[in-house]
Image 1 (tube, one colour):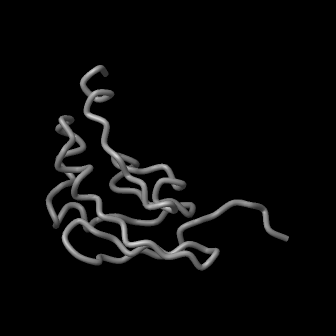
Image 2 (cartoon, helix red, strand yellow; image 1 turned 90 degrees about the vertical axis):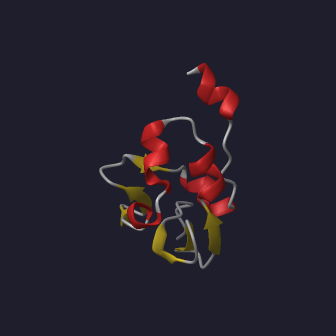
Length: 93
């Protein structure tokens, strides 16, 4: 029985600020986080743009997280490989 819930089962470095992410339905994506992280105006997000700190991710409850959920992304965005940065929204916040 398929519950319709998709989880991340593994992630590994695949280049500078890139991760190869595997999902439990067999889908695999190489996601480039660099444009998002380096375009951010928020210092707490930009803090993860260094390779050493970025590589300290882990999988928790099927989600990819950094720190204590200091940085995380909607699972559907990772699954569809659609990480976008909207400076206008960030500037308004």
